[in-house]
Length: 106
View 1 (tube, rainbow, N blue to C red):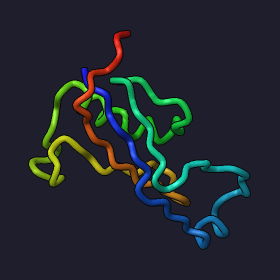
View 2: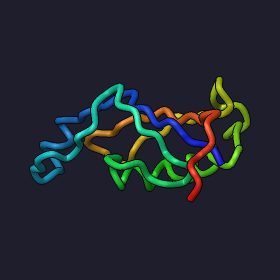
View 3: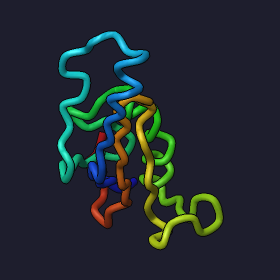
View 4: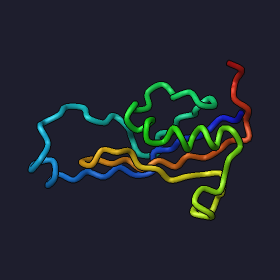
């Protein structure tokens, strides 16, 4: 099993939707563009949002176990995926990449 690199690529914020539909929330997302997390195989990295993890974990697990080429050539790098969290008000896009480094033993 391999480690998987998770990089915060882009963060969007739809203030018009927030004003219309969302109850005010403080500290909804603490991530920063460029922030990197390393998943040790299938384990969620510390500090990574649980909701985002739920969206990306199937891709992380597949890459950690050597899978690749999602959706028949979707990504230029077949050992990667671009996944967004499911927050409709402030979605975050993550680049997920299999690493050559083996995961630590469990």
